[in-house]
Length: 166
Image 1 (tube, rainbow, N blue to C red):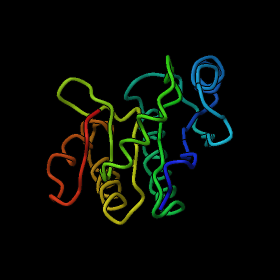
Image 2 (image 1 turned 60 degrees about the vertical axis):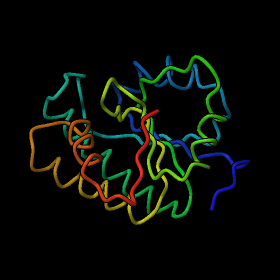
Image 3 (image 1 turned 135 degrees about the horizontal axis):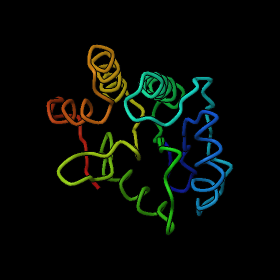
């Protein structure tokens, strides 16, 4: 299992629009830690930024598939998935490492009474893989984006699965 002194792998997904608008000017420019642990997946899906458009939903599906892949690739470790439009205003890694010690399977950022999926600390195990597999399946069968689906699933998942709102 990952020790608290090790770097946490951070993942994000961008397409050409995100890369130009967000990644260089926001995410990486304001990221306060070593950038060596940030892996950027580049999507070939052309997306103009319209929320809930077909291309937007295709990118969400790609992101959910990549989350499943990175869970498999990092079994036993914690990973962070972050949207590329995140801006950082202070160091946060000590807080994240503290959450890792709490045993939560997933930590989401709070958004009112809901979970915000823009930042997700994920413990890579069978439970989280099943959680995101279920989210992907429900996403494919709905007309919603992943955030309301994940909020519903998180509230209904088994008791031994711990989700924490930060």
